[in-house]
Image (cartoon, rainbow, N blue to C red; front, side, top):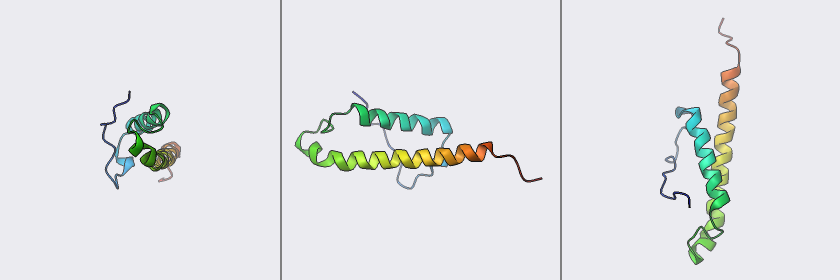
Length: 83
C-alpha cells in the first residue's frame, strides 16, 4: 500500500521553486494514490464520507501542478528575446 504519511506541500507553496523532476514525481505519487487506494481510503465509514472531497482536492492539485509544469516548460523553450 502507498505511504499515506508522505507530506504534501504546504498551503500556498510555490511549486516553481521546486525542481521540475520533484514536481513530476509528486504528480506520479498522487496519481498512484488515486489509482490504488480503496474507495473508502481504508478508513471505513469515515472514508466513505471524506473520500470524494479528498479525491477532488488531489485531482485539482494535480491539474494545478500540470498547468504550472506546462507553463514552465514553455518558458524554458522560448528563445531568449533580451537582445
